[in-house]
Image 1 (cartoon, rainbow over the protein chains, first blue to last red):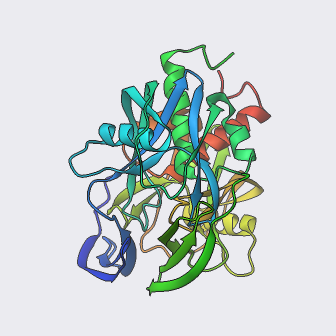
Image 2 (cartoon, one colour):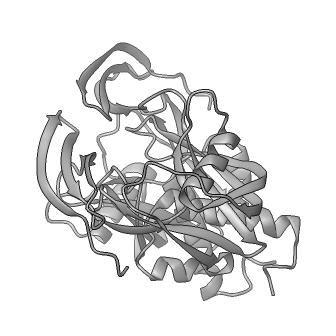
Length: 190
Length: 190
């Protein structure tokens, strides 16, 4: 907090592909120590959203989707980039319609999380979606996504299923559960 | 689960730096749809660890460290790569000694999480560390890290502090809290 920020003496793009941009940073720490760090820069400027869609007070809608990074199917929350001209709530509602086939009448920004702040610039807004109604929008997915209702009070069973590894989905589920528990103190504690 | 995995027809390294390797994948989904995806491959083969060090039953040790991806200081858990010849518990204990100045007599693997499985191959093992004793090892940090004790029952206050954004640290804290609560049902619920 009170610490002096490192000075960035030089910043250069050292590799760029369709989807990724890698930057090199020449840093000077307040200790005088010089370091060269690499980081992955955000693609685009608008950010991304992760949606926690509540079908009822304890049922969250998960998506089973192919994940190329791990080359396996993952159970996780609907998510995607914020398009130009959208705010994060608009983007959350659109992704929800595209990926889960529901729209939401109530959307609430819970928290913004980073993935690996030491080397990724990426952050994602976690949006709680409630008061759902069926509405399907066509997305850009290569195949139909499977929608899997899950009990929010069974996060641990989701983890032991071995199908959900994504830290930001896990964090979002715990944050949503805590938020809902505080709003209605007894309903999840039975 | 029952879905047929996409076939990888071609896989090529399209950019490589000191720290990152970007791969291109030519994929065919079971629907017949062809797509070209990019992903960030793991650097090294051994994986990484994130440590939840418990000073006592409710006090977790956090680290305040510069995060180049976001160019700010972040409060989070000690972490690092697993070195050649180490298992994940060895690596967790070494990182704990380097970053927090403590060793642990009890280490337990809680879960393995991914960051963004759609485009990152990276995973990290979450290790609960207990029965701590002071022991400092020299690390490769550019400056002394600040160790910040935090109450595990105050995760929400940590988030509203604005200093902790990292989804995997947040997920790890909730997982540890749940694990400890189940082991000693009443101690965190007072």
